[in-house]
Image (cartoon, rainbow, N blue to C red; front, side, top):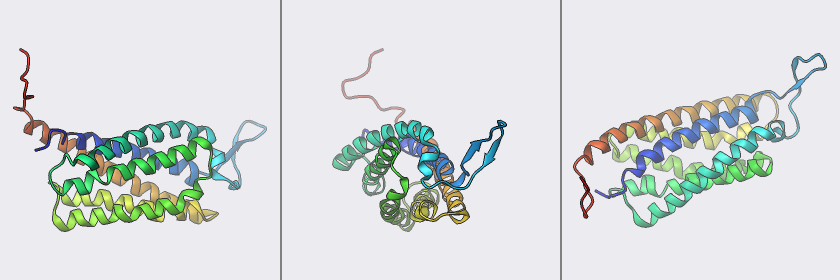
Length: 221
């Protein structure tokens, strides 16, 4: 067993945090109707603005710092894992090689949100990045990888579907895009919950596995 296998636990929980945060970002940008404050101080609903990203620029600016940080972390650790393959056999294909893709997409989104770029311009690359995600999910299910292949596969496939249909939330105008955005939100949340479940379960399993492990140079006390 590789020494650094426990990185997978925190990767999965980080993924869960990021996906649920992304669902909130979808809500703010593409589901919630823009509002303005009327002269009497009440909040009134307005027509959808030309550039949804500008409606919540401050929120996006704050969220961008999160996505940039997670993106740098995932990209750096993912590249390391892709070069060293610290996990058992095929798990490196499913997790080590997929993790830097997650980092790349997170970093791309974070930079776009920080710069105030219209997120609709990212709809095509996000949709295309869904292809390897869905492929990995199907592969996990076909080969029965992990102790919970159905959940692990579902995590990938739900995320891939959210990415695949995300242009439907970004590009059209009116209620149709809001409905698609709501579906994307649900898919992201479900995938995030599965990531949390798998990561937390793996933490307890790996703790038992490593109970008697000690570094080659020994321990003090």
